[in-house]
Amino acid sequence: MNEEELKKRLHPLQYRVAREKATEPPFSGKYLHETKDGMYACVVCGNVLFSSEAKFDSGTGWPSFDRALSGSVKIQPDKDGSGRTEAVCAKCGSHLGHVFDDGPTETGKRYCVNSVCLDLEEKQ
Image 1 (cartoon, rainbow, N blue to C red):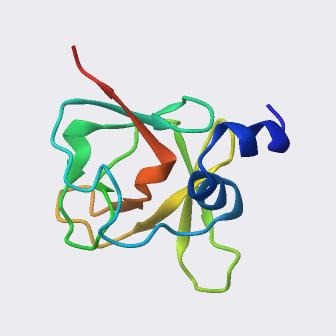
Image 2 (cartoon, rainbow, N blue to C red; image 1 turned 120 degrees about the vertical axis):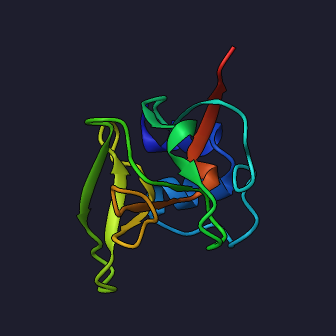
Image 3 (cartoon, rainbow, N blue to C red; image 1 turned 90 degrees about the horizontal axis):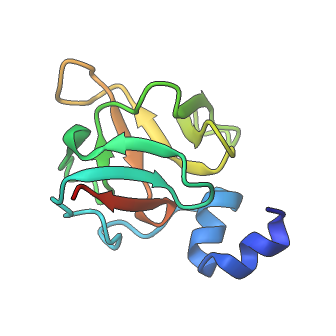
């Protein structure tokens, strides 16, 4: 799918965040307080990224996960000069958010992810 098709398919905020690396406003995302069991997938390509079992409330204003599914997320230096580490979908390269080394579990990771970049596939 090319960028023009994506612009038509995605909500403008979804496109800005996933493809132009914007950030949704804190405490505004639909998955921030979501507690349903399931799998979170990339809104652009459907790649399954995170299990609801890895989700936790970090108090930061965005959904947080302590681990990604193996091979689903690529970690790279953020090119905006902030020194942060960017998390992108390993399949399509869409921006998801950032990963920090201050997570509360044994992984020590906190994937801070924009809700608009995710689709929840609820467990049946």
